[in-house]
Length: 188
Ligand code: SAM
Image 1: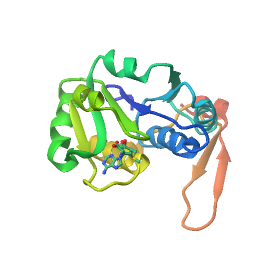
Image 2: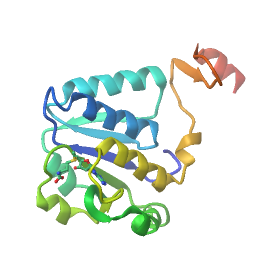
Image 3: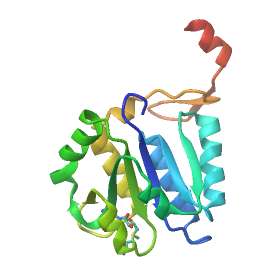
Image 4: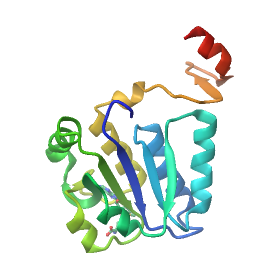
């Protein structure tokens, strides 16, 4: 989100076919819950396309990109690294320290989520290995809870730019309005 230092989400590992939905949902969750950017492995082309398409239609700012070396993305990251893992420290014990590095010290954050077994050097490269509970579950659920704790719920109120449609919240039913860019800028 623009008022915070950058948060990027790195998806480590992608098994084509099997991980298609999970990798896509890592990207969609990163976007919806306040991260600025998702980085997918090179072989996740379909997920990349889907997340870019949703961003075109429902707005941003949000970037999605691919890398042929996720390990280099970790090695070269200029900021702090959070690795989400069921083996990590309890989120409730370290979230304050992470928020303070991010907000008070202005450190960009790279949030790493795995697919299959994560190599040990990622645990060593991380500034924090963080467990969202110490029970096995999903990278999508872990990422959602982590981002919500990081932003303390502020991501729920964010504004979206460059959308061509907007969902109108309703008690019952579904309403989607198209966004008229000219009307918006006239009104501003
Ligand atoms: N056994 C794998 C390992 O050794 O890393 C875990 C694979 S799990 C299906 C995929 C990813 O979900 C993990 O790499 C981690 O990022 C995330 N994950 C699963 N449970 C988690 C938890 N309790 N807390 C944080 N992240 C979790």
